[in-house]
Length: 135
Image (cartoon, rainbow, N blue to C red; front, side, top):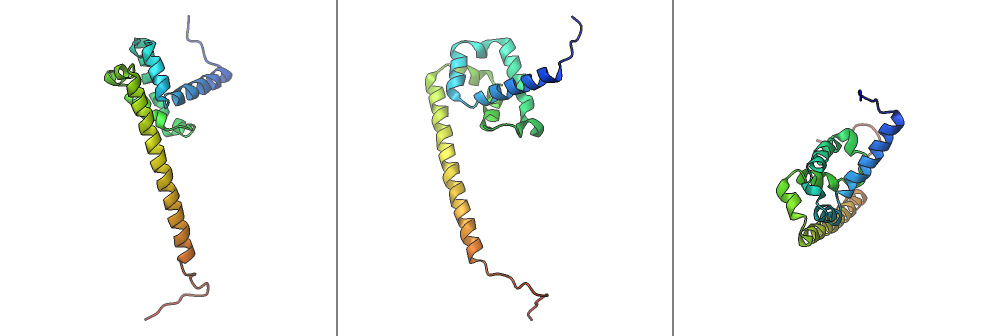
C-alpha cells in the first residue's frame, strides 16, 4: 500500500491518544500492569516507547498535565528498568517516592509564596516623584 496521508482529524485523534497514553506512564501501578502482562518485553511496544520521546520537545511537552510522565518515559528506555517493573514492590516504591516529592514540592512552594507575600508587605514604597539621590 502506497504512503497513505493522515487526515487532519486522524492526526488530531492520534495526538489525543498519544497524549493520554504518555501521561498514563506517570502512574507506576499502570507500568506494573504493563510489565506483568509482558508488554514491556515486546519489541514493537519498546519501539513505540522510543517513538514517544518526541513528547519531551517543548512544543509537545506544554500540553502535558503530568510532566513527571516524561521522566518515566525516559526510564522506560532502559531494559533493566522495564524488567524491574514486574515487581509490585518496585511500583509501590516509585509511587511512594512520587508522593513524597509532591508533598515536599507543595510545602516548599507554599513556604515560598508566603515568604514572597511577606516580603512584598514589608517593602517600603518608593517615592513616585522625580529622581531622588542622596549624597
